[in-house]
Image (cartoon, rainbow, N blue to C red; front, top):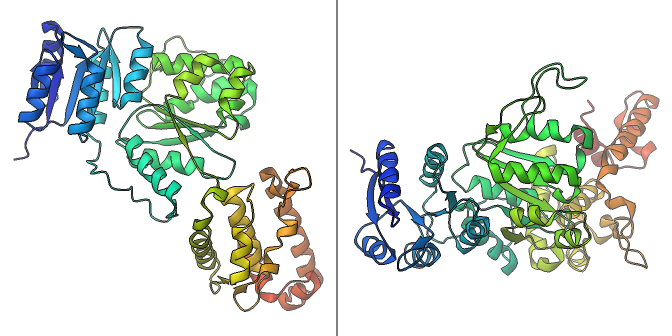
Length: 446
């Protein structure tokens, strides 16, 4: 028979202790109760626990002191803080100190059960680096530190603001925080805030009822409802218009949303992760981003390093990317010439990992004898900064579909003019046969 999981309840109010004991007992948990920090420490020294719920104000200290004690002595135990209603600053301080999550008084029993269930799904961690297969590569100090931070943040429910340049891998980091945490079996919903038209934003985030506006021909679920129980990743959050920022702040604070045209609020349990390549603090200073929303999103900041800050990872990244390209096309894998690798290591990569991937994909189609030379990288054409430091248009992400269409049309024209003789079509396009074969596979042209 499996041993029952055990929770430590720390509160000096007998009524609160009894309420928590009854609720957790109905969830098949054993409980131990303490009236103050001293008793809580004594219980922790005597028995192992799977969860701790502590009041903020205690007769001989604070819940924050207990959070810090547990982090140092019993780091595998998630701690949730119980705070007075409206004490948002206290709750945020608790999250920053390492608390798993928080509850406000009077305690909502439905919210309590959700919190406990989530806490008990946390994987036991022993401080090792997170295993992330081949998606977050690199043995440089910044990457080793990033992986450890991901593991730590995955065990919390604190909102995390992921900062970093375009192409550095912010969405991947958000996805890994979700996957390594207790919500991994539940939805991860990414949304690019800059890609939603402002007039549709409220409907996209919160859903709408049939007939609530012109074109609302049926009920629609919003992103918050789609992410319920899981994680909502707000990418490019700085692009939200101010009117929507107000509504988002309310949804985060109340943990509830109201659909467009709906009469009642719907409770949602969502962890919020956010990111932008902009300087969010500067956006606040300029009046383009609400300071109160900034504090709610930026409880903990996680910075993703730029590729130029970890140049020693470029060789490993390139090797894995080239292997992946070969597997995707069925062609032989290519390797980097020493001069080509040196050239990559000396390049600034304004587009970061995404730019490296695009650069290698292009070089892979151009190279001869499965060996990428420095000249195949075409660095002079690939977004090299100009005299004033501006990046060229080749880096702009929204050109990709446009350029792909041009490429497809030119290839189709060459194939039709040569009656689908691929060797002749390659010659007409100035490509090697291998390069044409690769492009045909990539574009899905049979």
